[in-house]
Length: 356
Ligand code: NAD
Image (cartoon, rainbow, N blue to C red; front, side, top):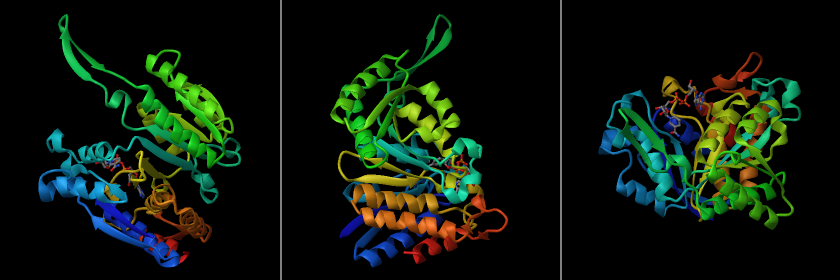
């Protein structure tokens, strides 16, 4: 199969980690007879420096015309002072919007080899953590109307949280379909005891649950979810929730695994076009030092194969290669401890590619 991939390396450690993911994709192409064609697009601070904007119109058009987008990370202190209208993150929001990326999938997996990196006790981690957060990405309070006004002599600020039935239904379907391919359980997170938008969310999810009798469905309030993730994370398979709750819970969940450098993510649209990126930022403190962990980006490339290209065997092969590398004792600095082989970003990427 021939696939066009828009490659957005971005800033900080972005280029280093994306290069390792490409090395791994090339190994897959060779092994399975595919052709991956990469088109580089500037994004974030490097694009501001070159073009004066965090992504150009041509760059955006290239993303839209591609089969999928692979992203490193954007931003850094150099661009903290730029005008808010052209901040590096603006490009991310623009790509999400232009590509209609409404579903954010964040797997949270504690690798058995790194179990002691989790801040949770062994007795809590139990048989491991392997859950998927499905976060709605283009609705809710981040996209609602906002205003600050003066009322009776003081400033009053308002942010509106809005959801329509079709927005809830399409993210719900992603969650149920994802659960069918995993542990067949969906927990829908809301605040239906207080919010109207949550009551609508819950009603739509209940309707959908009837269409998926093979998937066990439950409702859970967001505050309880925050507690349960710490108390008994093994109870969850797929968690589906709205934009802001998902933003907060997915960061909480990622910490249960001990290292931000290991975690991938996928942002999906209603077509097969998606954007794949590690969950961390551009890590300016270690940029250019060959210290970054590329596994989050490599696992993001595996998600690209799985969700955008339907290359399930190939995705499984990457995940198995990562497991093998960890079994073989390779550790980047963020996950290293005494007795293991400390490697840099490039050596870690090469080790994964070699096992394919
Ligand atoms: P960060 O995720 O970049 O870094 C947090 C800490 O984790 C740092 O100590 C860093 O060294 C470490 N870290 C991150 N990724 C790592 C990896 N792969 N391997 C080893 N260690 C890793 O978060 P931050 O420091 O808050 O943000 C830095 C910049 O990144 C900011 O400009 C921020 O706006 C931007 N950012 C971008 C994205 C994105 O592009 N999606 C996301 C978050 C933050």
